[in-house]
Image (tube, rainbow, N blue to C red; front, side):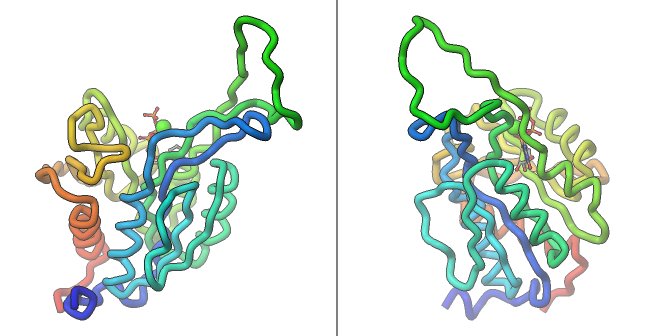
Length: 226
Ligand code: CTP
Ligand code: CA
């Protein structure tokens, strides 16, 4: 019923969504990752599909099933996510990056399980590519939506990301609040636009928030009501 009632305002649009954490291997049994559940990105993919878009969902490890009608590309590390995203980019009109990409990865992956020996262990980390910033630098006519997870100075920090990554919209999430962010079913966000506008949304479920975000995307794409 919901699908039939949703106006297909994104028909003809090719939407690329990223979701979940990335996982960076240390050795064959250990890794670095984060608490992202993937729920936000999967909800966005589902809602984009309901609105008639052709949707590709590039996802890190998440215990969620593929939304109906969405092309799912499973990846593990940030490097793999970058390759999958760049691969799909040419056939994409709208990019929505909800993934919690690990900022760093171990400098080298050990081929064998590491043995415990010393009392302390240092693992050297190197920076991962910033996928969204890379897309922003070769944006073309695409619409780019990013997320920002912050624990302080939400608007200032998220606004800086919008500029630095050449985004059209940033979903700023104060993850220090209860009911927001990683591994919960709700989010409390502010939406920041290129013209400096800031829109505050009340706490809501991730599916509902996904719908709100896509409504803004439709407006930014200049879709007419129908
Ligand atoms: N992002 C990305 N590639 C990375 C890191 C982040 O594409 N290597 C994207 C995320 O998917 C998100 C946005 O950039 O849409 C912001 O992520 P966030 O972690 O909030 O910001 P960072 O730019 O990584 O900065 P910091 O973690 O230092 O706040
Ligand atoms: Ca980060």
